[in-house]
Length: 628
Image (tube, rainbow, N blue to C red; front, side, top):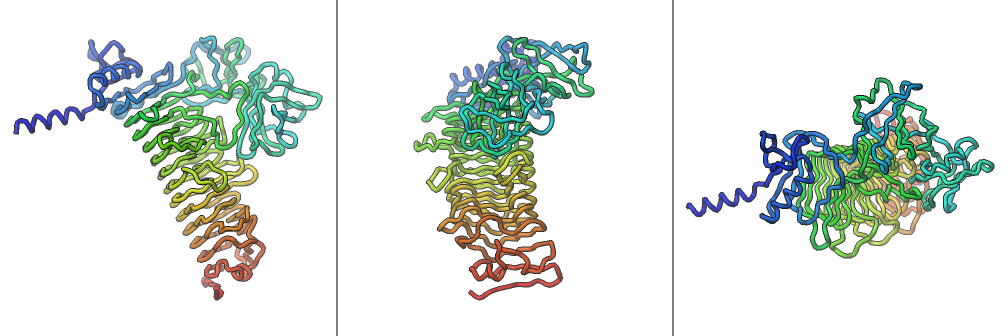
C-alpha cells in the first residue's frame, strides 16, 4: 500500500507543468517561479529569459511539460521567437484571464506639433536603418499617404504585360518626380490579384510609368483601378502619415481629438512574431499557445515590388509552423498584422486552431499547406482542425488574401467559423488547376458563417472556392450571404478548374452578385439539399461544357426575384438536375421561367428536372412531371 501511494504521488507530480512566470515589471535575474514580486523574487521580465529557464529545466527533466505564463502588458519582441524540437511539450499562455500582448513594434515618442499646421505632428525615428510601412495609433491602423484619398485612378486601356510593367495613366495622375524618390508605390487591383510596385520612370509625354517589377499572367484587367501610396504630396487627409526616408522624420495629420503627446504610437520592427521550426524526422510537438495577443508586424514588397498570382500566396504567416505536430493555438487575438495571421506549413500535422479572434490583418486568417506538391510523407501537411474562430477585416495590405487558405493539404476540418469583411474568397480549398491527383482531399468545410465577401473590390471569387480533384471533400451546412465582386464572379459556392468528387450539401446561400452556385469545370460533383436565393445576375452558372457529367443538382430550393435562373453554358446536357424547387418571386406564370433559353417543358424533354416543382404565387401549387 505504501509503495502504491508513493508511485501515485510521483506520477501526479511528474504530470504537473514546471511553471515560469513573466511580467512587464519583472526581472530576468529572478527565478520566474512566482507570479508576483515579493521583494526578493518574482516573475521574469522577458519571454526570452523564460525560454532560457524552460530549456535549462528541460535539460534536467527531459520531456516534462513546461508552462510559461504571461501577465498582462505589452512584451516588445526584439526578434522572432523560435521554438525548436527541444521546446516540445511547452505551453505559452496568459496568466489566468489577463491579456498579454506579443508585439513586433516599438513606440514612437517625442511628437511635436508643426507650427504652421495645428493638426500636423512630427517625430524623429530613433534608429537610422528603421524603415516601416505600417503605423498604429491608439490601437488603430493608419493610412500611409494615399492618392487619391478615396476611390481610384484608372489604368488607361489594357493592363501591361510588359517586363517590367509599363502603366498607361491619365495625364496628371502620376508625377515625374515620384520616380526619383525610389519608394513611391503603385497599388493596382487586377481581376482576382494585385500588384504593389515602385515607380521607376515616368514618361509624361506619353503618360506611361515604368514600374519596378514584372507582372504575373493573372495580372490582367482593362481600365483597372490603382492608387498611389507613400508620395509626400498625398499627405493631405486626417489620419494619413508619411515617413521621409532621408530625414527619418515621420509626419502625421491628426484626426479630430487626437493629441500625440499622450497617444500610444507603435510602428512595427518585425515581419513575423513566432516560428515553430522542426525537422523532418524531429518535429516540434505538443506546443500550446493560449490567451495571447499577437500584434504589430510589417510587410516588405521587396526590391522590385510584388505581383500576386492568387490568394496572396507569396505572403507567409506571422505566426508560422514548419515540421510541427499536435499543437494548439486557442483563445488568442491576432490583430494589426501584415501577413497571414497563422500559417501551418510544410510537414505540419494535427494542429488545432480554435476560438481565436483574427481581425485587422494585412493578408488572411489561416494558411494551410504549401503550393508545392510533396511526395515524402514527412513533408506532407494534413489533419488540422480550424474551428470557432472569428476572422474579419482581412486583406488590408494584400486584398487577394483568403480567410482560410488550404493548398496541398488534406483531411482538414474548417467548422463553426465566422468569416466576414474581406476582399476575396472566405474559404479556399485546393491548389491544382485541372484533373491531376493531389494531396488535397477529404477536407470538411461545415457550419461556417461567411458574409460580406469581396465587397466589390476584386473579381472571380467565391465564399467557398475549390480547385482540382478532391475525393472526400464535403462543403455542408454553411450560411453564406452578401458576396459581391467588382466586375464578374461574385459566387457563393464556386467549384473552379478541375473541381471534382466534391459534395456540396445543406448550405444556405443568398444575396450573391453573380450566382449562388457556379461550376467553371469539373466532374461528378454533387450539389444537393441547398437553398440558393436572391442571386442578382443569375442563380446557377456553368461556364465550361465537357464530355463527362459536370455535377448532379438535386433536392435544392432556388428562390429569386431578379436576374435569370441559369447563366453561361447549358447546351450539352452533361449534368443531371432533378427533384428541385424553382420559385421566381416576380409572379410569372410557371412557363415564364427560362432554363437557359428553354421553356420548362423543353427542359424536361432534355431529361432534366422531370420531378421538380415550379410553384406559382397563389394558394395552390403546380407540379409538372413528364414520364421518362
